[in-house]
Image 1: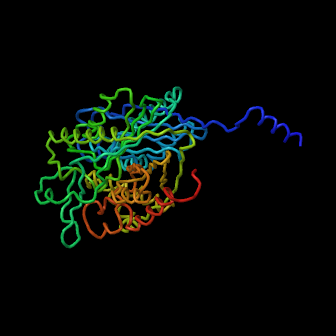
Image 2 (image 1 turned 45 degrees about the horizontal axis):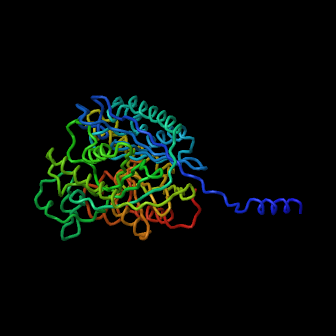
Image 3 (image 1 turned 90 degrees about the vertical axis):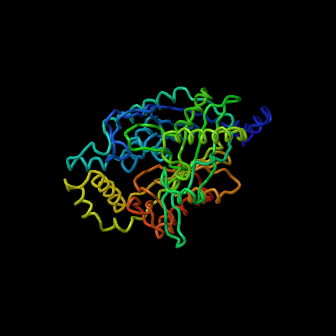
Length: 460
């Protein structure tokens, strides 16, 4: 009874004993990720780096509360897959004082940029063609410099008092790559550029036309801008000219306009979306597409609605999933080994065989890919692997129609393209050998997204 009396006395003496909500803080980091000349680009087997048009970057945001930090990172590279993801996450987590399951590493997916898959590169080295896929020393050095940048960033975090969320349509950039014929099969594939008049005349098809912008504020000062938009982000590529392309150009103009704001862009589920309807591949079109992206970014910023935010508004949830292996890979290891070992096979085929083998062996050993969701008040950011079809992004928004749902795809690049179940019966490039997952992947991912977005399970 003595303890109870003391507590009652304290309540009477000090009145309201509610604890003030804890503040949320953010730290940001940026590292140059531009490769040396002669570095393989786009996963190897194409023209290597011959000139630098503009610099590539690693950009990241660290959310700091009384729990372990959450780190989101976007890299101006084509893809980071399999053990590449593992090593990036492990090293970044160590520097941020958190665990790998609270780290997301995505790529923006510009094609005239490097990739990373350490296990595949190791296989290629064992067969005498090491360095044909990417430059290991440069990649590891980039990870090391990123880790150091994270340690430095954590020395000067900034308090976040508000966030704002806006969206705007991006006009005449995105179009669905898969144009179906009357029989329901793919008749045309509109890649990032297209000159087929019939394909160009076809409707935009299924896309998400909206660019979404999440802005963090310290009182009246905007400090971080995160943008999300689903499309393949290149206008032309393949000549060895390293570039962030039209998405990076738009981001750079925003940086020049708002130099005190940290800008980071995430590519959404753009596996079957590109600029083909509006782009013939001519260099001038890169500028036009950049201007259209820029206008979307500006309007989304202007439309953003500002609300207070505290640390308790941040929730983090993860779900590991096993993706079903594509049928032609289930019993295909012997043939892949044969291609990989064949000195007369072209280098692109051998690189692809190594990547297929790494993914196949991983699936058979029970590996899982982590999906995650960062909730910030009524805004949800869901993190997904591969070259994901836009239907997944649209489905995630339908699951929470009264909330804001953003999606970052191009996480683990290992599975390649990830289509919907029906798409595998329609033909087309995206569901050919470049997809390492079976049609049943739709059921797996849709169920996982529901658990992330609307399940009552406690956030991790």
